[in-house]
Amino acid sequence: MPLALVAAEDSLHWDTLIAVRRATLDKSDSIIATLLTARAPEVTWVPPAELRRVARRAPGIAADPDQMGTPFLRAENIIDVPDPLRYQLRTLMGLTGGRYVLVPAGLVFRVARPGATPRAAAVAELSVVMIDTRVGKIGWRTVARGEGDDPWTALTRAVKSLTPGLP
Image (tube, rainbow, N blue to C red; front, side, top):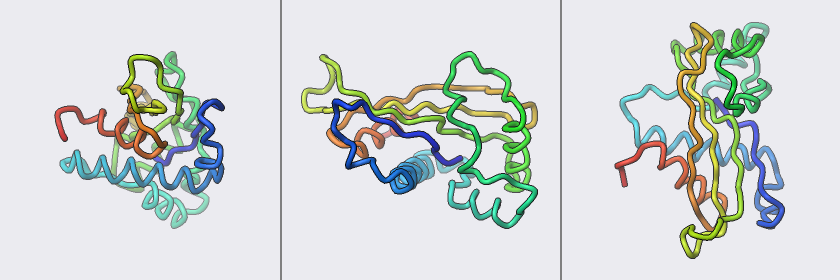
């Protein structure tokens, strides 16, 4: 699924770096998809751009992946995915031939706290959930963290932390 929420603490002064929402979301999606595909090649990944194409080819059947309410999935107390999101995800996965969907539910950049890498300005916190669309339940969730001096380095390190043990 595509990322739908990106935010940064004001004290980072990254307003200009992430100000253009669509460009920021697209770049984040690209980083996530590229790294996951390279680091977990045994999985059949369908990147956000392909999901958008599938949805456009099925108007009236599939919802626009960018307009689904996925950011609320960051809440830790959600186990069952409510309708209409459950139905929308199941429909999309049916059209792509999948069952499980990896949802980057939100990306937040925070100021690095003491004890972080000495040169790191910020920490990227990428909330990720895995949903079994047949039963509509969240089977796995995590917050991947990565440090960096710019948003893209921090995000790259956060995504790499999802596949530990690889360089």
